[in-house]
Length: 269
Image 1 (cartoon, one colour):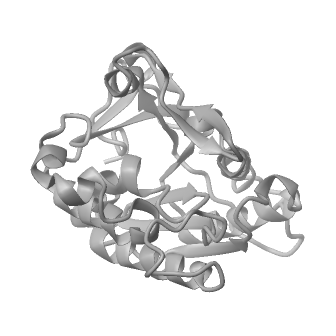
Image 2: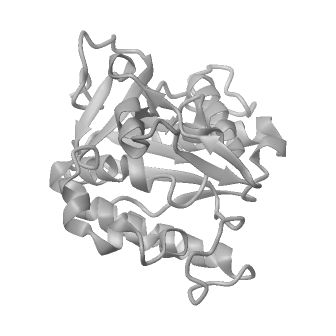
């Protein structure tokens, strides 16, 4: 896959880890150029291990953690958009999209992965990145060369995927029927799940689950040292849903699959 490029676009360090870390590692191992764009350095996040960081140095620490994860996956070092964690909905939206358009034209990926319109659990930053990346996919191919007037080389992304969570996983997390949620500002934001019928790609990452787990552990200020990823590795590595990652195809210039894809580069190889 030396002629193929995959670009993932997320909001914070660790957004890539849980649902796409295996795919990033898999495609890098297959010879694909894999890049990760991250909008912030996660400086508003909680510090799970106070001995590792303080609020004052958290941006630098979380940047190092993301660089550790990218090295673990075997992909290129992260590209930062240099926005502040928690403020993505209020930055200049056109400028943010313009940054991504320039990155897309520079890297020229065939496949782009980002958040879906639900942002996994409705995080404001996730929703903003979804809008930016979705718009940038279209505008990068614009022959009028948005956002610049100078000569440029438009680029058409072949396939845009949204990272999604299967409803089956959420049901397993909440056997009593109470939806799993992330607390933000004291308010629970429930995870959004998709039925199997709405998932268009299931990627087998079984050969890369240890790289995926180690990538998660790189984000130590977020996951701490008491998570199942650290304390129960055998259980994690055997988990069916940890060994596969799920996506919805949002846009395609190469047609739509008849069934569930097993390869994000299907119809491109």
